[in-house]
Image (cartoon, rainbow, N blue to C red; front, side, top):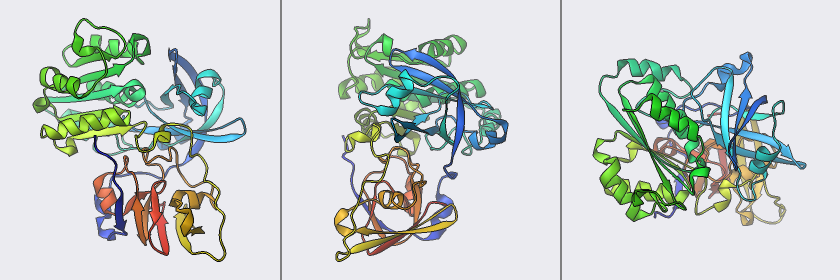
Length: 403
């Protein structure tokens, strides 16, 4: 397993800007819950109505996510959830699995109901297929590119638990839009009763029998084939790659689940010579920060300024307005934490280096970024950072959330 490392950097030349992925400004709108559908005993699918005047803001590419914001027991709580359906006008669907101790996920599973209105961020994220998507936030690009494709493409996904959510959107879309694409899924769960979207997965098998295959791996149930029983460890992963998935035939990989599984797969694929650019991954927890998948980190922690101590000046641009806050060197706080003390509307969701909502560009100043599971290499090279993971290393730093 690869341990996350600390990246040290300084603001980069603006000429690298053109190499970054297309992303749009994160904004919240109040949307009404249309339906809450039970998927398993511990998971629900929530459908939101998107009014016509907001539909342009809520188009999305399969694999993207939205952040949800609600007040629960007097506390503002934010969580990010992947969109789980083919792009359709007027509706956004997400799946929410109850986590032990999770404030938002427990509330959503037990109390959220049709007619409720909560804040939903416009779709974000780059966990999308490079093969079938030519631009973010443009679902029509999938169909346009599919028409021009002649050669067969083989896509493979390895998911665990609620990691199936973005995979469902990607698989349904590429299978329906590209008749030359096949999709193979390895889906790990504790038992058959924990399988989310079991009916939809079955429908895909029936609809695309020659182009879609699923391999359920159950850690607490015995399967006829022992390869599909038990946890996916290194030995089992090697066997799956050798006898089932055949990496040499795969154009693109999608990995979604806990840090340990995703990193295991990334390391093994790299060992087998799979180019990193062909591997897309998304996490819902990290080993270095186990709270990144929980409901923590929703507000900036309190920091007491020392008038006689050494402070760092943090400047930021947001929605065309400039902000400024002093941060004690001794506090070692992140840019996000400091900015939230003066602007509570600074965008963020997971605060764990996973979702990328708090992305900003460093205009001036040195910095260190602890974790990064959301930004592409070209974005990092262009000076973009996750402000929830970035701390200044000089007397002042300036970042632009609007860049």
